[in-house]
Amino acid sequence: MDVTVVGAGPVGLVLAAELALSGVTVQILERRAEPDEAMKAGAINVPTAEALDRRGLLPAAEQVQREILARVGSFARTADDQQPGEPGGGRRARESRFTGHFAGMILDADLVDWSDPDLAAHTAVAGARMVPQRELEELLAGHLARLGVPVVRGAEVTGLEDTGDGVRVGTTAGPVRTGWLVGCDGGRSTVRRLAGIDFPGTDPELTGHLAVVDIADPSMLAHGWAWSTRGAYRYGPQPGRVVTVEFDAAADLPHARLRSRGGTPTAPVTLEEVQTSLRRVSGTDVTLTALRGTATRWTDNARQAATYRSGRVLLAGDAAHVHSPFGGQGLNLGVGDAMNLGWKLGAVIAGWAPEGLLDTYDAERRPLGAGVLDWTRAQIGVMRGDAKSAALREVVADLLSSRTGTTYAVKKISGVTQRIDLPGDHPLVGRYVPDLWLSDGSRLVDHGHGGGFLLLDRSPDGAFARLGAAWAGRVSDVTDDHAMPTGVLVRPDGVVAWASDTTDLAAVTGLEAALHRWAGAPSSAPEREPMG
Image (cartoon, rainbow, N blue to C red; front, side):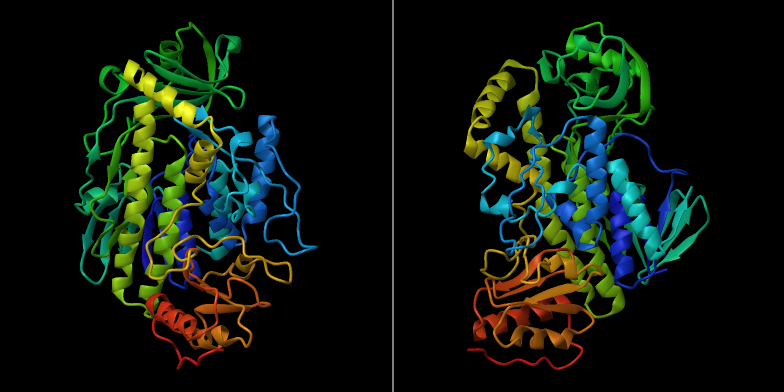
């Protein structure tokens, strides 16, 4: 087996699928006998939705959103205008105005500047944002099954040994020998612990609960977010859904037996526990009569692995970073890890890229992870029940009542401003590829469902495509009528590795350098010639 992935959550599923698309053999080990039914993330951001889009899963994700909206009973605001950049006569999309919240302050969609270039460049996936984690896992499991990747359940990792040329893994289902091991096994990652990777960060100050319950008298609760001296709670947006936040709970409550190295309390969440927490923060004697599904407990424990790789052992998702769930960043950050690592590890195993390519995984994903940790820490600072935080919350609320402030926050939450520091001065380089509409009515990403690099060539004589032909099998060229940008090279993870608005010698030289850097040595001599 080339790669063994530990953990069948969304990060492990995405990673295994990307590895399978690259042609390597891969399996998933999951300690749970059945999929986790606990309520977790309620939506995905733009890069995650676009990752599904690049693999042909957008229609399935859009169907999930339609079902969720019907279930909730309220519909997101939509717009029927033709999408920016869409050629005349092309498809018309309904654009969901998905905003989110910052520290419990709901962002008003009417205050957002939806014509902002960063937002307007990523609208094709607007109908696939409201995809909860449970439904996302079901969608990804089907994708993985079609790729023929086995998921071994009831296999808990008990030991590992990196032998230099592979990894020996002890599990409750028997020993496993694998070339590479990737821990996608959550904040209390066994793989991280057994690999001896440190997990520094900040200790928790709160305990939160998320549950769907039956309530004897729901009129006792305010809709939306409400604060008190003991914390905060939210009721909604769907019937019975409650979230509680207690800022002294991590130290005071008996159930909050936190591990010293990352993670949240492991005891099952009971109806009584949720009711006690809700009564405490709401100041009411509200009565809960039933717990629907599995409730979750979480903290603001914020940590990041000292390294995302140790020899042939790698980490992704919560195994590499944990933080509070405010803003729904964790799931999306992990999917980004999986997309970044999948093609790189596949390239190293296939032999067309040196092992040093894996060093760029940590270098590229670590700054994004650190930024998310600080984004969530900032929200905790605003949400505390003390007088200073209350004053700060008033200041932030004032900023978020402005068009500029709301647009800034929505862009951060949606992920459209994420950028990796890559060589090149074109504004697209290092960004996730935007909605690039082609003259035939398709989009560039429609041509890359099988993985690999995409090279858009809008040069007058097709010279970019001729150069890329030397990387046939790794790079798929897509020619189009002359327009701007004239050329774009997109990595398998959706990141733009090169772009140009010209067709001169400098553009050709830049493309060739990017192809060598990311797509390895050419399989044939590249046809390089200057263009006028």
